[in-house]
Length: 52
Image 1: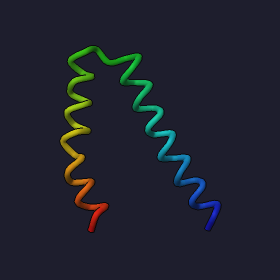
Image 2: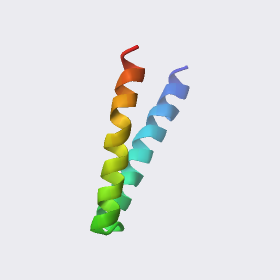
Image 3: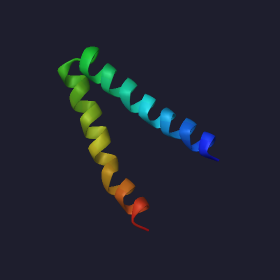
Image 4: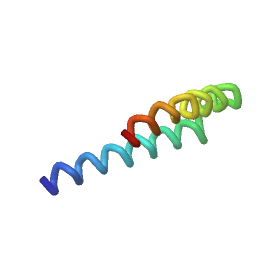
């Protein structure tokens, strides 16, 4: 079980790091704004899911 959780945590951290790398190094300002708007648009739904 510990191995599975370690793999899951690594996948989450890796995905976040990849997203940030693309955001900071390869996206122009309009793409960065779109990425920010998409993330902040999903936050209320994520909060609702976590606080059930």
